[in-house]
Image 1: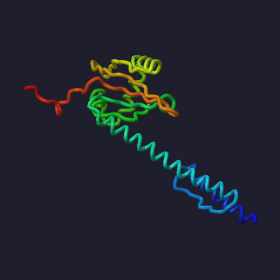
Image 2: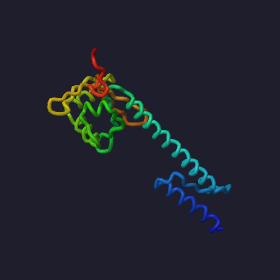
Image 3: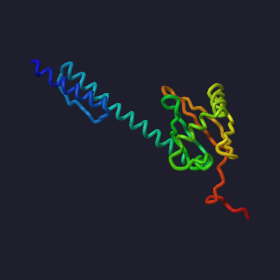
Length: 179
């Protein structure tokens, strides 16, 4: 009797351990009509729901990136990360040009911007009154970036910071010649 009870319980424990390690395809496949079977079905259903929610969260980030990429004006969306480090969630081409970001330096550049006193004041005002705040950032020597700082509050999640440039930077590849 003990063996009949212990084997399903060991399988359930192995399934829970695999899920905790990140294997969202793990299932116990226990079908008994007792308490262990009830717990196994609950763990299996939890795995399915976790997988569904993670897929939806990932698709939301992908959709956000696509929307930002389509904007003709500079746009950066930042999510607060661990230890106060900001994570770039989305960044479009016009923002890369306006902020002089090349290659993989986006995170570093955005953290530099977020550390500036002007940006922190604008962000604080935007968080306080809920309205977008204008901000002039000095990107490099002699280069200014005029933007609005927005704070998007999300239920159950940290707010997103949106830095939206006023106009698209000139780009000779897309500029229309004046006649």
